[in-house]
Image (cartoon, rainbow, N blue to C red; front, side):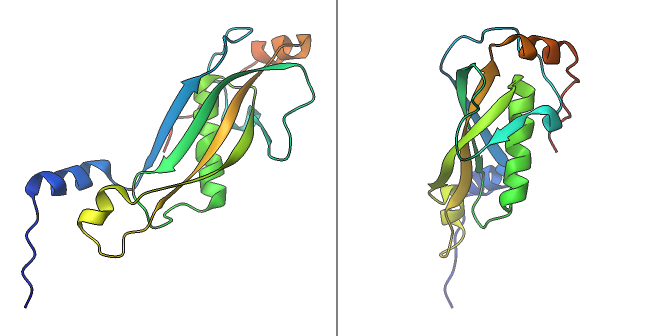
Length: 145
């Protein structure tokens, strides 16, 4: 019988990271106006092309599973992306594509660890006057689950 030895520090790391979502934001340009948090439902989502309205690409948002195994489907990943964008005050997001990262800490415990899936999108702030009137009525963002 094969004996498995597990480093307690690695086990603790795996337990602390859980099966959540890791969110990264990289600023690109200064926003044209204040960007308070808003409701996720108010964040417009574009997938085939960015909006035609005048806008500034404020930053890049990336969400990735903390562990592999596709715990989140496409709908859940999109919901998490909208929540992250809402916390940043994005008027809209333009999805750039999907990411596929290595297995992370899963590889320590599972010979069949799978890659972690994610989504990348651009955080957009509108520059036209319509954005200013929408911004005045923004609701607080809901807490991430």
